[in-house]
Length: 271
Length: 239
Image (cartoon, rainbow over all chains, first blue to last red):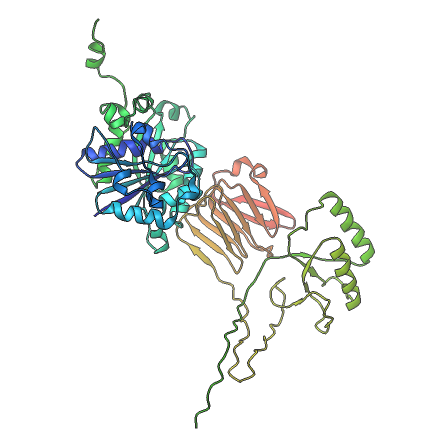
């Protein structure tokens, strides 16, 4: 049974695209058929993070308008065969997307994929509401700081009113993904701590992804962080989150990049 | 013998209530109008787009007084939506409509709206006077949500997020943290606001408000009761 997942946040720059790519890759590596859809029309980034920017021919708008078939627009990942990408248009804007068009695309994708992950743009306007409209599950990406938390709260309110599930009277499954978490800063009181964020947002925690330089390195080489460096702290956090999405119960931990003694002794190869 | 029924057009009547600001003129009118002009000089666009109702309860006005006033206000670009507290016998068609149900919660006997159909099976029934009742919300109020319930109290089981707003005709009870705005007693100074943890942005009772800056720092984060003492908003801790 296909599941439609939306990765949203309200606030920009908190890690939606990074998380969409990382979780998508993690789920696909687990054997599922996963498709990632970039809903950020005009400001697309998912193709860059996936390393597919030089293979984009047709995009979501082309499919919605009927200029191309879905199969022509889907880009299969070269590293993980069960992972595909449906990019957004860079030249058009959000007004080109229609509710019926998006609905039809998602229905068609449900026949071929187990997970359909929609990468929402920032904000609460049409792009964001269309991305969440047909979702069964929502991941609210939040940084542990006040503006991000308030914006996430707004988005949670919209998830409970502007989705098809909400209109049917059902509650959409919501998960909190805390990203760019810096334990040292939280201890010094510069960042909100996890309990504060959970108290304000009151939705179950899916995972805690620590702040790490690995994320930028991975996007610079056009790879989700779970593929570029699977042993890194953020990648391990995403793998855990993917397992929880699949229904596993795991203890909540914050992976760290601290090297073990072994790693310190044999850290670098001599020239 | 059956009588063929007349085909009826369905003309439907619905009950609606809208919000309007009530402007209360005072005698002597010339002085009052002068004050109004001074106000308009300072805030020229204040009345643009606002539905205004004239509250005539402060004085015994004559029909011609009010007709003149409506014209004077029209010249100042203030459009009068209706008259509150007017004499029922005034029938001049140039007058704004007489409003009888709603407005200030005084005893206003509801008029029966005459049905278009003259049969006994009248289509229009008198609108029943609204009974006060509470609105119960058992999930948190999220940022950006606006809850309005003018017919009574509002009870929230959960927190009210920063950027959310609750407007109640009666009291507001929050079994959680209040981080947003609570506006109680729209028109009832006896209303109170209760919350388990005060982190509010704004509290108001019967139009008198207090922002977060004005709340004593010793009260932030505590369980409080907010009420009106004359013209002051009083906040006391409950724990």
